Image 1: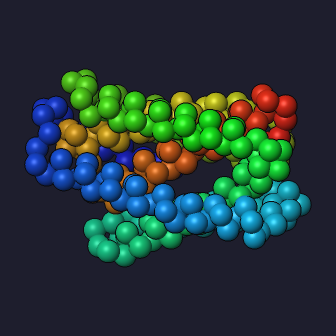
Image 2: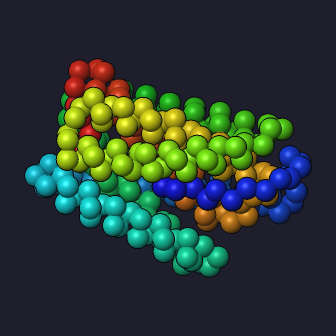
Length: 231
């Protein structure tokens, strides 16, 4: 996900409109977890993802087409109710796509790994949210890092679809943790400073950051606890 890199110089004091954007973002973000949970339940219990392993390159192409296509439609309709509906559809599908890694984890009886990844994700998010909300520092300098990081990660993902290197997959997961953390910090700081005034767009960025944090943490935990690669 490429964040909105627009920045503005502003006082760190939250105005009423900025507070409303922040509040609506958190509410929509919480709501988005419901279809994610439903999608994850369907993905784990009712879908056989063997076809992904059989054709990883084609699966990646289809996933990215749907992923970025929906993101484009959400951003295009972010100022109306359709944008909210598309965002919830997006989170439902992303929940379904949690199926492969959750099947691996639950199949190995690694329920504690899933819980640990979820708890770690929550801790990181709330910590970054607190810093981004109260820090007097302007984190707009992260924009260039995020822009470059987005393209580097995209190239790495495409390359590993062909190479299928476990070490590169782990490196990508670790990089996603750093990238997603920076994106969350940047987005919340931009809301507080008035650089992001649309809660749908902000929710989309934060949701993808949280999603990537969870899957990356779980991937690393599974790998270092005795195997299991991300499907």
